[in-house]
Image (cartoon, rainbow, N blue to C red):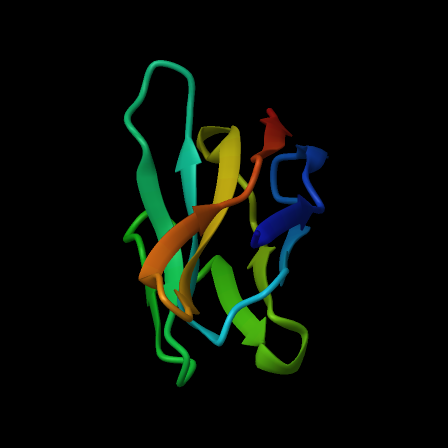
Length: 120
Protein backbone atom coordinates (compact mmCIF):
# COMPACT_ATOMS: atom_id res chain seq x y z
CA UNK A 1 0.00 0.00 0.00
CA UNK A 2 1.40 3.38 -1.00
CA UNK A 3 0.94 6.29 1.38
CA UNK A 4 1.50 10.00 0.90
CA UNK A 5 2.24 11.96 4.04
CA UNK A 6 2.03 15.74 3.93
CA UNK A 7 3.51 18.30 6.28
CA UNK A 8 4.18 22.01 6.49
CA UNK A 9 0.77 23.63 6.57
CA UNK A 10 -0.21 26.25 9.11
CA UNK A 11 -1.20 29.83 9.77
CA UNK A 12 0.75 32.69 8.24
CA UNK A 13 0.22 36.39 7.68
CA UNK A 14 -0.25 37.96 4.27
CA UNK A 15 3.08 38.16 2.50
CA UNK A 16 4.54 35.28 4.46
CA UNK A 17 5.89 31.95 3.31
CA UNK A 18 5.25 28.28 3.92
CA UNK A 19 6.81 25.12 2.54
CA UNK A 20 4.74 22.01 2.07
CA UNK A 21 6.25 18.56 1.79
CA UNK A 22 4.73 15.29 0.66
CA UNK A 23 6.59 12.00 0.96
CA UNK A 24 5.52 8.74 -0.67
CA UNK A 25 6.22 5.42 1.00
CA UNK A 26 5.36 1.79 0.30
CA UNK A 27 5.89 -0.63 -2.54
CA UNK A 28 5.98 0.71 -6.08
CA UNK A 29 8.17 0.75 -9.16
CA UNK A 30 8.34 4.47 -9.70
CA UNK A 31 6.43 7.73 -9.52
CA UNK A 32 5.49 9.66 -12.62
CA UNK A 33 3.99 13.12 -12.02
CA UNK A 34 3.50 14.59 -8.56
CA UNK A 35 1.65 17.72 -7.65
CA UNK A 36 -0.60 19.76 -5.44
CA UNK A 37 -4.28 20.59 -5.55
CA UNK A 38 -6.17 22.82 -3.18
CA UNK A 39 -9.77 23.24 -2.14
CA UNK A 40 -11.01 26.43 -0.55
CA UNK A 41 -14.35 26.60 1.27
CA UNK A 42 -17.19 26.88 -1.21
CA UNK A 43 -14.91 26.51 -4.22
CA UNK A 44 -13.99 23.75 -6.59
CA UNK A 45 -10.76 21.86 -6.33
CA UNK A 46 -7.95 23.65 -8.15
CA UNK A 47 -4.69 22.32 -9.53
CA UNK A 48 -1.96 24.45 -7.99
CA UNK A 49 1.16 22.95 -9.56
CA UNK A 50 2.53 19.69 -10.83
CA UNK A 51 5.90 18.35 -11.81
CA UNK A 52 6.87 15.46 -14.07
CA UNK A 53 9.49 12.82 -13.40
CA UNK A 54 11.87 14.90 -15.50
CA UNK A 55 11.11 17.95 -13.32
CA UNK A 56 9.05 19.86 -15.85
CA UNK A 57 6.66 22.02 -13.82
CA UNK A 58 3.35 23.74 -14.52
CA UNK A 59 1.48 26.23 -12.36
CA UNK A 60 -1.96 27.71 -12.01
CA UNK A 61 -2.02 31.32 -13.18
CA UNK A 62 -3.03 32.40 -9.70
CA UNK A 63 0.26 31.20 -8.17
CA UNK A 64 2.78 31.81 -10.93
CA UNK A 65 5.76 33.77 -9.70
CA UNK A 66 4.89 33.09 -6.05
CA UNK A 67 4.92 29.29 -5.69
CA UNK A 68 7.67 26.88 -6.65
CA UNK A 69 7.23 23.14 -6.95
CA UNK A 70 10.18 20.78 -6.77
CA UNK A 71 10.84 17.12 -6.11
CA UNK A 72 13.55 14.91 -4.74
CA UNK A 73 13.15 11.61 -6.54
CA UNK A 74 15.68 9.89 -4.27
CA UNK A 75 13.31 10.61 -1.37
CA UNK A 76 10.05 10.21 -3.33
CA UNK A 77 9.12 13.64 -2.06
CA UNK A 78 7.51 16.68 -3.62
CA UNK A 79 7.71 20.17 -2.19
CA UNK A 80 5.70 23.34 -2.64
CA UNK A 81 7.42 26.55 -1.64
CA UNK A 82 4.77 29.23 -1.21
CA UNK A 83 5.91 32.84 -1.00
CA UNK A 84 4.03 36.15 -0.97
CA UNK A 85 0.99 34.36 0.37
CA UNK A 86 -2.42 35.98 0.06
CA UNK A 87 -5.67 35.39 1.95
CA UNK A 88 -7.10 33.81 -1.22
CA UNK A 89 -4.48 31.07 -0.93
CA UNK A 90 -6.28 29.81 2.17
CA UNK A 91 -7.35 26.24 1.47
CA UNK A 92 -6.70 22.61 2.22
CA UNK A 93 -3.78 21.50 0.09
CA UNK A 94 -3.61 17.93 -1.18
CA UNK A 95 -0.64 16.29 -2.80
CA UNK A 96 -0.95 13.51 -5.31
CA UNK A 97 1.34 11.12 -7.09
CA UNK A 98 0.99 8.99 -10.21
CA UNK A 99 2.19 5.65 -8.86
CA UNK A 100 3.54 2.97 -11.18
CA UNK A 101 3.19 -0.44 -9.58
CA UNK A 102 3.62 -4.06 -10.69
CA UNK A 103 0.31 -5.53 -11.80
CA UNK A 104 -1.57 -2.28 -11.19
CA UNK A 105 -0.30 -0.08 -13.98
CA UNK A 106 -0.37 3.61 -13.09
CA UNK A 107 -2.80 4.98 -10.52
CA UNK A 108 -3.22 8.12 -8.45
CA UNK A 109 -2.61 8.26 -4.74
CA UNK A 110 -3.63 11.23 -2.61
CA UNK A 111 -2.38 12.71 0.63
CA UNK A 112 -4.65 13.44 3.58
CA UNK A 113 -4.55 17.20 3.08
CA UNK A 114 -2.94 19.98 5.05
CA UNK A 115 -4.58 23.27 6.01
CA UNK A 116 -3.00 26.53 4.90
CA UNK A 117 -4.51 29.69 6.36
CA UNK A 118 -3.35 33.16 5.38
CA UNK A 119 -4.55 35.97 7.62
CA UNK A 120 -5.03 39.48 6.34
